[in-house]
Amino acid sequence: MTRACRLTILFLSLACVLAYAVPRLTSVEPDAVAPGGAAVAMGMDLGKGSVAKLYLTAGGKDIQLKITEQSAESIKFELPESTAMKRYRLMVLTAGPGAAYMEQPVAMEVVDAATAKQRAEEGEFELEIIDAEPVEEEEPDPKAKGKRKK
Image (cartoon, rainbow, N blue to C red; front, side):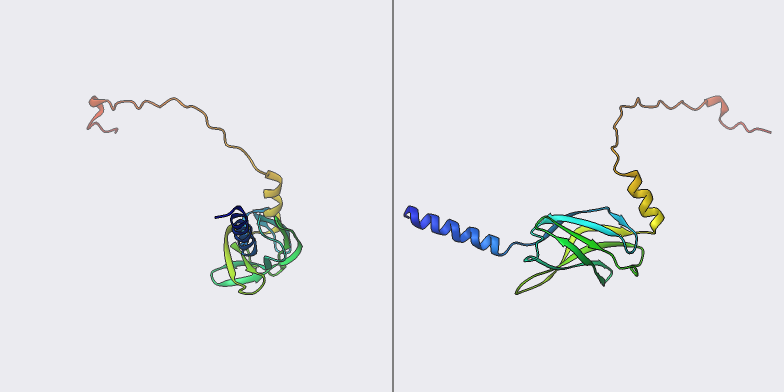
């Protein structure tokens, strides 16, 4: 194969991959939001050309979210005031021909305002692994066997 043919195949392959970019969410911050609150979903291929709409989904009930800002790496959104408090997964509706709903491996919880504020103040924390000495159990006293207190 000539070098020109190889380059042509490489560029066409790259164009196909870019044309069929699949949106993928990897995280959402904060992961606990009050109804009417806002959050940011992060991931890849999230621009307007890839994602038309964003939803919360749980048990067959889908709630459309208001997208306030969108880029290739993030989508800022607001929850409706009427959103029920429970755990939801995020779902996107892809843009363009062949649009499809794609549930994402990212979840968030809708909680009351006080809980959302408390979790935001707590922030993230690191767990520290410490070495602990094993606890030796005492052998039961064989003389105490069968004796009852009166």
